[in-house]
Image (cartoon, rainbow, N blue to C red):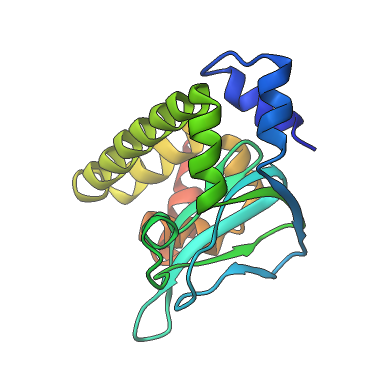
Length: 193
């Protein structure tokens, strides 16, 4: 374990072998089976998680009991309820496994210590948080300016493996669409090809 993490980190910052060894001491490897929860709404999020293998989903449930996908996390992705993780307040999202998943966890105290002892990791996370902010901003703009078909087409072009791995009802929820709408869009696209 740690191969995917270090591949991902070294795309943004270079690490020495000594730094890698130190970083390993701050993480704990974990596994989830398909449909098991990593986090449930109302609990405090104690970990920031990095997916080494598998697929997680992050979502919230409205007062009608309908799920609304926030994000998917597959190999090389981080996930957490960031507000809960950093504030200690109760989580407002759920995270569970779409596939059997192997991941690394780090708690808030270890995160602080790691970023102090390995300053390159502080830079790495700053880059990640910047990119995440830009991505969320673009997703918000897309949600209010693009048609349903445009949203799906952009997602399919930018994440073709995600479209293959995630059930269509979850893709529809992520895009803010009814499953029937997504099915119709996919059919229309297939007919045009």
